[in-house]
Length: 106
Image 1 (cartoon, helix red, strand yellow):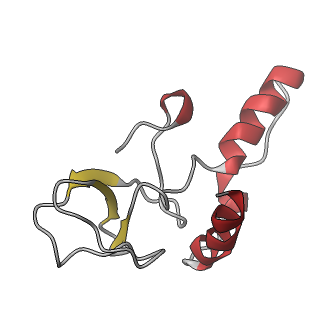
Image 2: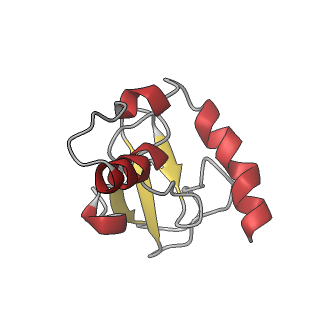
């Protein structure tokens, strides 16, 4: 897995761990989120279970739930916090929802 913010692992929209790799050759690798062709030697991330490849721009940030848990734990130590499963959708619809938000931020 690829380190994320605070040492957490990067995850696909369904919650599986992503593996970072270097694209071995040009022409056969495309980001499944934005459609960009991945150049030889560039970093990309893959989810084996979802059969998903992502470029560096489309890799999701660590789940929002983890950030919320950190905030809640700091504000109210010892208080229970919702499970990360609450945030998961079980399909790739989250990825599609994130793409317009990423485009607006750029």
